Image (cartoon, rainbow, N blue to C red; front, side, top):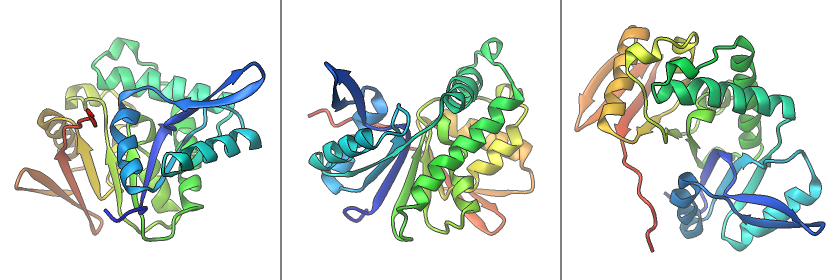
Length: 247
């Protein structure tokens, strides 16, 4: 990975805003994803695209960009409306995918509107990426909130390398099959060049779902990696257990 040539895309930025005595303050966001990935950008540089957590505000954008540069990388905020946040994040991400992927079927709410907003907001993230994409960077998309970003990028003409990493488990076929948009989501995932998961069991579950729900795709296994051929594309699926910069 060349210095400065990676764009990380996640639902939240590694920086968040707080208002203290009428003054905007920038602080590091919490969570394992930020803990694991921020050292990569500190070492190599690059750009992080993510939800700013607020509505569009020039002061917020400027403060985030300045703080990110002090940390050695660029920061591109994505702004979503309250309605989009309700349906995309609280709705499809947290009331469909999160419980489904953790085998809490009874907690799922399969609302068609959630799916439409999920795709729409994933498209917003793709638009933000395409505004800075020069055709050479590696695009690295993260987690269940943004599984459709790869497909949205392809729809916008992106022909570069796109990787995806899932930070949650991936469910077995019997669980995943409960999702009304199961095949649509899998086809969106096949627009990535590399799909990374935490464990070998997650890989087996995803491959099993692909074999049953996308039978026209061909698969081979080599050196622990599964290779999927789909519409002229070669997609690699493999487990990459994530670690942290413990120092």
